[in-house]
Length: 113
Length: 112
Image (cartoon, rainbow over all chains, first blue to last red; front, top):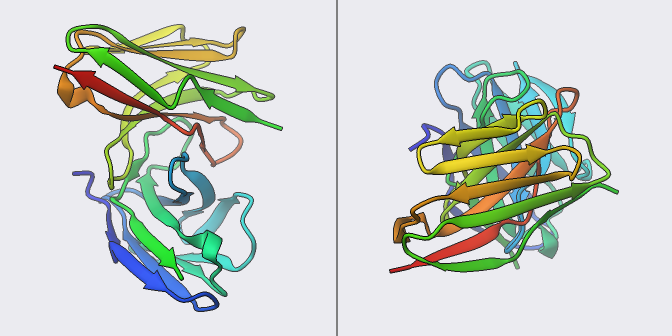
């Protein structure tokens, strides 16, 4: 186990709704990254937070937003859900800096109907 | 645009043989490359990291090579076991950006 926990593990939402996913980092890690993984694809980078500030963003629309708290836990919020948002959402914690390994949680499986 | 391709969707080999997985990339100059293992319904698990100035890295039965001229990394599992069956992902990154770019993965099945 990596020490990174995500909640909930599964979620079903209706198109147009909003969702909040949560992630607790591994102890001592100050950086959290969020990824979206569609079925049969590799994870796609959404954004990264370092010490409560956004520190890089992938090609995702503004309705994907996040937060990092002083204890380095994090939230991913998605507004106005679309069917294509159905995916496995992964968070990964790490120490800030280049070429550090990322420790992934087990993911949240989001289904939008 | 940047592209990362892993050799095939699925690879089947016999127990005891060496599995070789390929990661090719275009329009990108990564500073480092990582390999992850992912089991169904689970998050990826880090295996190995190799930097652009390193040719080869080993860890137990795993070996990774990185050829920046060919824009390719090879991932080898020697003396493969059924427990090695999983999807293997390569991920590229550089020191200026914080995002890692993942390939789609190769699903490896090791048959007894």
